[in-house]
Image (cartoon, rainbow, N blue to C red; front, top):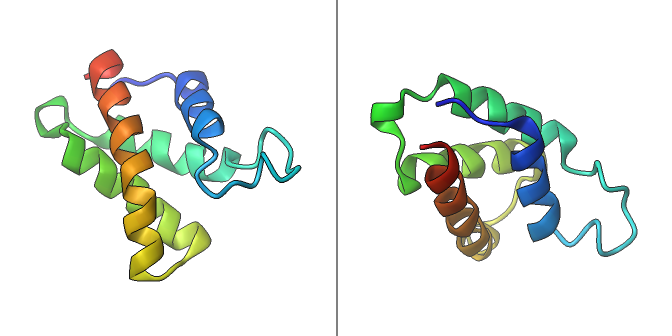
Length: 92
């Protein structure tokens, strides 16, 4: 899947899933996560691109970077699905 790093970064900054940017963290707070996500999206064959497969990528990266309980994973899911829809619409 061919994606644009800046666009993906912007989506994650806008959603600020962990609320870190709104709490005063720098705008590049999610840079490490976005780098891993972009790498995984670029490796995803277009034929396998779906909302669920993209959300799974986001979730896997987020768990590695932030950890969290099942409840936290479920709360993030709404944002992940919204971002995945945009990614699929623009780059799918």
